[in-house]
Image 1 (cartoon, helix red, strand yellow):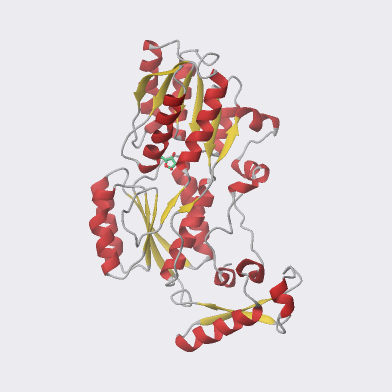
Image 2: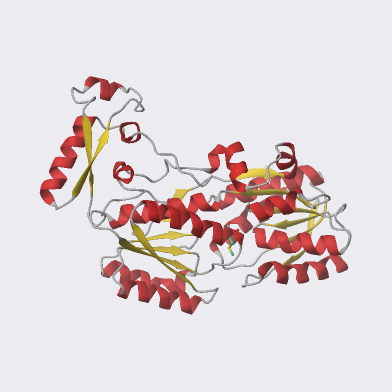
Length: 382
Ligand code: SR1
């Protein structure tokens, strides 16, 4: 899943080779941009516009806009959280995409300290970066920095934090769909009846969005009784959730399921269930996926039977591409929504999936190279 597909430029844009050339000429006149020739070669599928153009078989020039004509381009990634599989994979994808686009990615991790994240945002502004990616965080603590960045002409894109600013495009994984997928499986497996427990911490945008769906599903299934809501987000989330889940299981050994919509939550729940010897009775419905998660889900007797998620590396790549477009003065859609998939234990076992790369080969929708892109991206890269 780590590899990206490079798409034929004409197929990507829908523009004719002639219009690309025209665009290249006009941009070259306006700025000292570097042009890179991209051949409309045999790998470019025939399209009506290309076929109608007299220059369809000629080389099409794609202008690389400033500041990407003089790499490296500094872009800041300002993170609230960085530890755990999800955030590590996300960063790996972001760094890979940054390297391909000639971006020097300046990464800060506030380790769940919101004041530190606000300070890191200030630092990025003072460094004069060309764009900023906000990754999780709190609207209140980031808003002053967001306003300052915009006033300084530095564009921002926000992943999993509500920037509450129309000038800041939002990226999310469709948390409603993610929660819906996992909970539909929980309802199907339990028959919509019995006691369950729920791992949730308010104040994190994706968790709050998932919680809205959880409440809807509970209301729609009165036979389900949520006996305990608990959770912690920290630098050691899984271990702390394990301790909390152990107490919940001691008090409620008759629960049938734990809804744990973050993989660190799910890992903690699994450990507690296994320590209590309840893996045949209590099942885990989670969110997110990683190679480590696949190992836990497919282990013999694992209670983690389903998860819903995206490929975090793909999400990181999308965020960097969005920031690159903004840095080049282009617009991006908002919100940018990346659809998750339901991944069951049965599916992983039946398909002998042991890594996230293998999962990507089976679920090709997890990679979205066409989401947020530009013709000139293909003229960059290694
Ligand atoms: C504490 S928030 C954790 C979530 O952020 C991302 O949206 C991941 O999906 C993870 O579940």
